[in-house]
Image 1 (tube, rainbow, N blue to C red):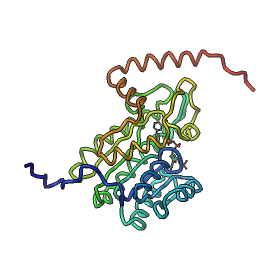
Image 2: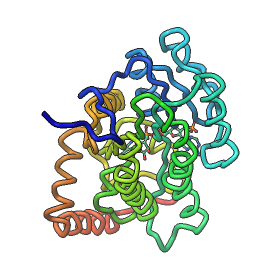
Image 3: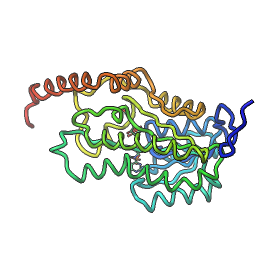
Image 4: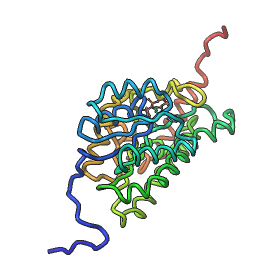
Length: 281
Ligand SMILES: NC(=O)c1ccc[n+]([C@@H]2O[C@H](COP(=O)([O-])OP(=O)(O)OC[C@H]3O[C@@H](n4cnc5c(N)ncnc54)[C@H](OP(=O)(O)O)[C@@H]3O)[C@@H](O)[C@H]2O)c1
């Protein structure tokens, strides 16, 4: 019979979602909204946050009564991140899961985008989540079966042209997830990275700069399905999830045939750049 490690108390094979106190950033639309609802419907208590307060109010109206509380603000504001931790203590009595979902991209050739765009994309997708996690750690260490969920992208596995800032931020997030997973294991804090592929959401309407490139359009997974896979990953104590065949296929190609991805995207990019442009208005 194996003896349990003194530093890691035995935990059930499956994490119990009911009763968990969960902070979800990016809860006003897309994956974050679906994740907040999925956790609330499973008996979790959610602190939902994003900038749009009206959207958060409609989220509360849709969820089981009393399951979701909200705090509106910009996650890139360090004072606001501090407030989220304070609200978790005041209104939930602590925190068991920190789920960082908020994110937004920028599209365009790196040479044409500005330093301000780079700063903003790094702030939303990497610096803010990293600092939020650090601030939440004392709460998580005192929590029940604690975990960190970082929503990244398959573009953190291998980048695409015209998405340089976003890909760099998601690659940094993926790297941080790997570091934290090992560092926090002795504290019993799990780290789940969700590397999403194309997903139906408001992502392309909320870009920091540019607009969706015609050559990167394709089939998208419903946000609710991606959120359901995140909850399953949390429940099953997964290290990383890649929801859907597109995400899994891209991650495989990124690992074993990165040159093929580069060759295909270079061809698509060249075709798009040589396509006739619509006449100027
Ligand atoms: N959609 C995809 O194809 C795809 C693919 C791979 C990865 N992802 C990742 O999935 C995550 C969720 O995105 P989504 O697809 O669900 O897009 P979405 O519908 O645009 O959701 C993004 C969420 O982030 C919030 N947000 C953005 N900037 C914020 C800020 N400065 N402060 C606070 N909240 C902020 C938005 O709320 P407010 O505007 O109300 O603040 C919104 O709730 C992101 O991390 C994204 O990078 C998406």
